[in-house]
Length: 149
View 1 (cartoon, rainbow, N blue to C red):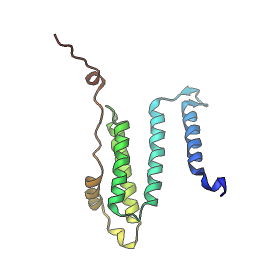
View 2: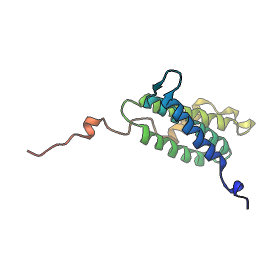
View 3: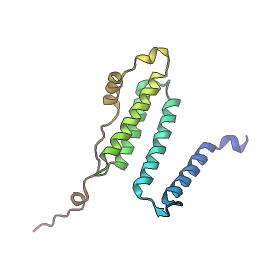
View 4: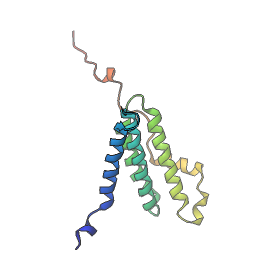
């Protein structure tokens, strides 16, 4: 069998694009300044949303419970990693964008699926997706040590 057929070239391209994007954001050639970690996190979040949208498009005809379980694991992993204090708005917007992508995919299943409204998707989201809340405590709470006296 041909090596090129077995090798997943799209992953190589995605990794290359990610590295180019990170290098471009780290050092902007026009202003010669170093980008902050927030810009890098925003770029990685946008790339993850793009990957999730593509996967949802491919899973569109799977049963809703299968899609819901997979989306729960994706959103919960994102919350576990990015759920630090002060990042509530970003994790809430990620969850909202995943909900929009899921609604779009469910609506495009067939002509009968046009009846998916926000009310129906809210019920599915409440059932399958975790709520966006911070997962990690503040540093002064996490690093506090109580010595017995």
